[in-house]
Image (tube, rainbow, N blue to C red; front, side, top):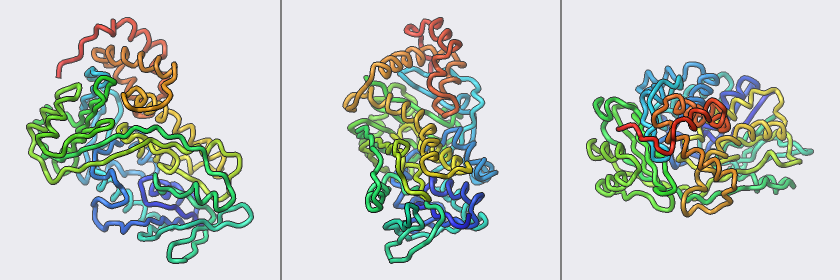
Length: 430
């Protein structure tokens, strides 16, 4: 095959191009932004200035698509470590037990990560990344998409078009223009609001730990994360449902003090702030059910946030995008089989996030009996994991998208939870 066009130089678009260059002689990536020449924030990535989680599975898949990318990022200052041994996980109000998970996390700012991925992808044979190119529609002939139309009138022919334009994808309306029905859309109105500060990092902060994650609970629907970054920095993001943290330093610290664990409050009070705080809001998690369509034009695929935009609190977006990009290596790139393949990738993180969100006060939706049962079990599971490193390891394998959620109810795990007296478990001290 000759030419593939990717709409969007997002992480999803870049990783899609990394996969497609193995199948096509030429790959062209088009982005509406003026892409920065150096690693910096850009307008099209609204969450760029906030904490970004790259799950262990995502790092692994990125290394498959771009061999050596982890080592290159570490050489530029990114940090890596075991996600259980060097991290503090507080879930359900319980501090999960330490141990070795065997899961390697990569801690890196979004500008450095995206910049290095863009450099690597742009250097692949036959790949071009073009900035300030606004795609306004699709070209088609006899039931097949044959290219894209740009705002300046230029027509770019292609054997395959991949829409990786993110939450703002115009694909549903473009399908209508071609005489196709748009996909069913599901929305969960989460109204998640962020506030973020960066701080100077000393190696004695948090006794050398690299990550703090404090999850929300129905009784305290606020969360926070601290990630060590390159250049001896912390990025600390605090999150609330329906309300966010104040952006004054005192207000930010006070908000951190309301979380179910004191770790972030201590860090914010101790560390020296850098730069200005930033806010961000995600009104809804959105999933477009392309896999349920029965009719779709050939030569066209959709991936990344254009298919499913998760609650960013869970840090799953980049990892799912990487896994979907790897699905492009399958020799069958007919759209309906492709959408069914990536639905299998999306199902697990969507189930995790929606089940968690619907337990939060103010989030409207159908909390099914199954979700209630799973939530009650997870409360017991987290309490048991406070003193059982093996349960923590199993939980992290699920949240890092290696194992499906039902594995937490496998006989070996269920026995450990039931024998723990989980309701009486005492969290491990900070």
